[in-house]
Image 1: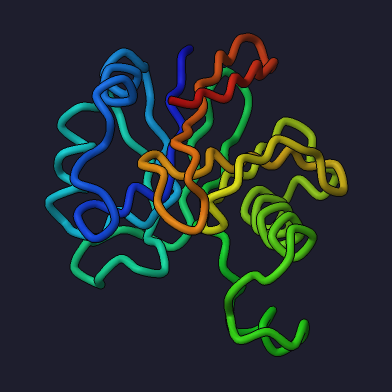
Image 2: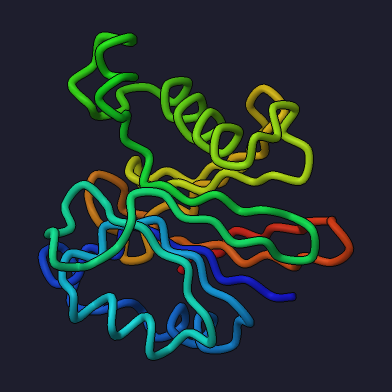
Length: 182
C-alpha cells in the first residue's frame, strides 16, 4: 500500500497552497496521513477531497472547527501508524517543565514514541510507527523501539524553508519511507 505523509501545510497563513507536485502524490496514494496544522477547515476539505482515504489530526494552530482529533491511528498491512501533531499534553508539560510546546528533538521523539506506545499498547514498539509534525524538520528515526516520522512542512513554512513530505510503501509489515523535497 502506498502512503502520502505530510504535515504543517499552514495554508493560507504562511503559504497560498500545497504545491502541485505534492498534490499529485496525495492523489496517487492509497492512504494519506496528515499530522496537523492545516489552518482552516477548507484546507482539511481540500486535502480530504484529494485523498483516497485520510487520517489526520489537529495541530496547534488549527481552529477547533477543523473537527479533527488530537491523536488518530490507522493500521496498514500489519503496521499501526499513530498520528499526533507533536506538542506535549498538559501532563507531559508539567512533568517535563515545558509550556506544552516541544522544545527539543529528544522531547519531540519522546512525545511521538510515547503516544504511539500508549495508543497501541505495544510497549516494545513492534509494528508501530509514530507520525508527528510541529517542528517542520524532517525526521526518520527510532526512539526507544518506535519508528518516528516527521514529514516536515509541505509548504516550506517558517521556521524551515524546505518544502517536504514523505511517501511510504507498506507491505507485509515492512515500511519503506522516502522523503521528498521540492
